[in-house]
Amino acid sequence: MVEKTMGVISKLPVNQILSAIIENGLELNASFIHLEPINDLIRVKYRVDGDLINGPEISKKRLDSLNDKIKKMANIQIGYIDLMSGGKFKYSHNDQEFSIRVYIMPTINGEKITLKIQSDMPVAATLRELGFWGNGLDVMNQAINLNSGLILVTGPGDSGKSKTMASLLESIINHSVSIATLEDPVEYKISRATQTQINHRTNLSFLNGIKILLKQDADIIMLSELANSDSIIEALDIVSHKKLVVSSLNVESSVEAITKLLDYNISPSSLAYGLRVIINQRLVRKLCPNCKQYVTPDKTSLHKINQLFDLNNANNMRYVHDQEVKYYEHVSTENKKLIPKSLSTSENKLKKIWTNDPSGCSKCYNTGFVGRIAVVEILKNSPEIERLIMTKSRDILINKQAVREGMVNYLVDGLLKVLVGMTSIDEIIGLTKSNYLT
Ligand SMILES: [Zn+2]
Image (cartoon, rainbow, N blue to C red; front, side, top):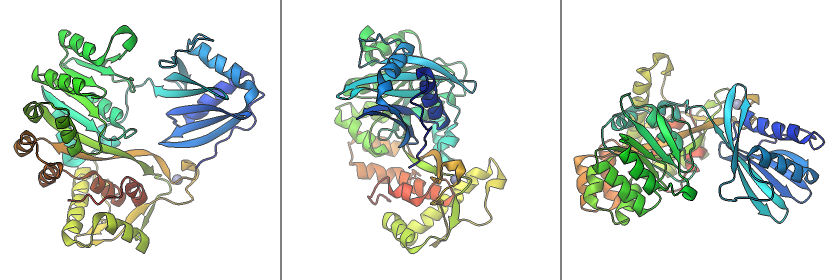
């Protein structure tokens, strides 16, 4: 864990303390800043790439003035706190605009404030940069450019679903379509969409919002999450109006998304005919390009890989090798120079893997990692999968059929990203302990 301190800042004027805290967070590319009053200190912590990093400690004597300053900036009435909605202020740093959302929780030690940092710039990352490639990426690009259907992005919390949805909407080719979103909360600016924040106080719920958007003649509607059966039924109803819907679901796998939707008692035929593609993803830490290492795997790493992927099985080994070949075929369409002289695998052997330098370097704060990348699986609907949905088939059968039709399981995608130098095997093992290669 990185210890990033700013020395003794307790004695500075309150606005300087606050800008030091915020600017340090922006430099670290933090998504949240926590200000925790504990005993006689305010402990500052930064959420960076999923981990909490310790920041400076400030004398608790400054808590009231610091919190009052934040509330004033966020337009929150001092003495009156709307805990659920908090407040928001703008912050400029290095010519970039940020929105900082403020959430307050009273604790026995005083108010704990959490700042959520969002860039006001549109999502800069392309789907390719987020971790999508090859056939899966082609499937996504085809689906987002259709006139109607349901595209689902799935995964647990903090798996990068919102960023993928935003990046998907940015990759719509047709400029004569109307794109609208209903989000709770709005996470990323999307350059071509009109974005709406759900607001329960003004009765702007998902259901009411959908009704308005249909009247407003929207072609493509993004709903940030399908949280309950009402919103799922409504989403499929929009699809039946010949619209394209992009939304997310908090489930562990593409196939689980289908079985969960069927559990909600929606009609199997409306799902079977409406569904276009399900994207499932997780985030793993990305190897620092400055200090990553290409090594012959030692016994421990080989054992871990075999436990998860059973590469002693010749079919599995060949499958993984084929995926590595496909990956570089895909990359070569962009830039032939990216193809290495020799691959990490042969048809019957795992030869090399990439890994993190345990002591890291100055560019990665000695962690060996910089940023995160998604490991992904993309399930494309097909006549055979439609039939399995209609007959409410077991998830294992749907999964088998999807793999037969070219879906690469997200763990295999993860292993591939170890072979081509994007992440380490421990990051992939950290995602699950189950053997899911089919
Ligand atoms: Zn490094």
